[in-house]
Length: 80
Image (tube, rainbow, N blue to C red; front, side, top):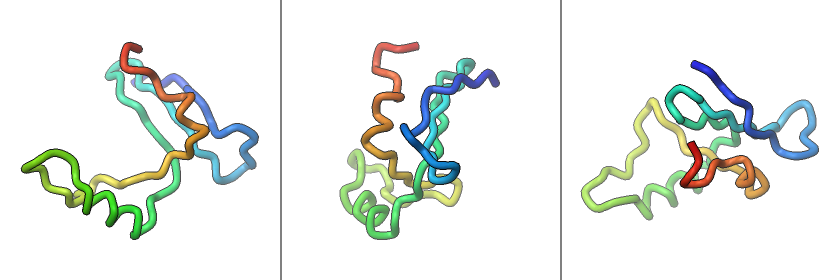
């Protein structure tokens, strides 16, 4: 796995530092951020995604909140 650092929240202290990386082999994003609150996670489940797809979050997954300022570090749809 070859990771490339994409960005960290600007002016971050030593803690509370949402960060993004790109796995250059798979193209996957790795994201360190804040866990969604129970209220936020419930709202995501209530909205759901696509018809016929469970809105339950499996034990091996988690909903995270990525601060707006971090959007600049997310690759666009045409990036490799």
